[in-house]
Structures are given as structure tokens and as C-alpha cells.
Image (cartoon, rainbow, N blue to C red; front, side, top):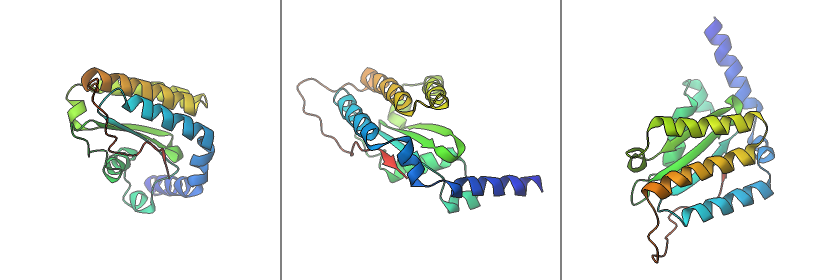
Length: 172
């Protein structure tokens, strides 16, 4: 019986929020600054970085009791983060209804980075979010991800960079 109540509470929590909550968390001015930071970051490496802020999981995910990680991996594919020449895309995913943070990096990048490095990025972002500093937390996470990408996939100097994916923040 406790499991039924737990699932019902989760369902209500996810249906209680909507995209307006994501928009309040990141107003247009913050989105614009973060998008500029993503574009600047991507000039220094060959990877692609995306930030996705989702208010709540879709009903189909809730009905099958899917985890935030499952949704983040699905969004990684849906946003075509895997579609990079060196398999070095990174998705920073926030699920507001559960205060969940997931970082999904493609296999080309994960060959060079251990899980503890990504966990440290998630922990820093989590602390910033608990303090209500969403934009600052995302900026720091972006800087950390960028440092990893620059270290392992630097943009060759003198070679124009092709941006294969849009730099906008995905709000759902």
C-alpha cells in the first residue's frame, strides 16, 4: 500500500508543475546569457553542450515508474546529442519536480572522464540549486564541462568550427 501512495504522490508532484515553472526558474535574460556562454564554450572545443530543464516527467514515464536518469538519457537522444563527429556531446538535465540533476556524456567523452568528475559537477550544481542560484549553478557546470571538453577535444586553431546542434536551452 505504501508503494501505491508513493507513486500517487510522485504522479501528483509531476502533474502539479508545468513548463511555466521552468520558465520562472530561468527567465529570458538568464536563458540568453546561458546560451551565449554555451556558444562561447563551443568555440574552444569540438563537443556539443545542451542544457534541458524539465518541469515534470511525461505521464508515460510516470506510469512505468521511470527514473530521472532514464528520461535524461532519452532526452540526450531526442536532442541528438549523440550526433557529434567525436561522440562528445554532453547534456545537463534538471528535473524540477524531483529536484533531480543528471549529466549525460557521450561515449567518446566518457572514455576520458571518470564518474567521480561528473559526480562533482552534479554535486556543485545541486548545492547552487539548493541556494536558489540556478543560473550561477548552470554557469559553473557549463564551465566544468567545457574544461573537460577543451582538455580532451580542443578546437584546432585556424579551423572554423561547425556548430552541429543549436545552443538554445531546452525548457519543457
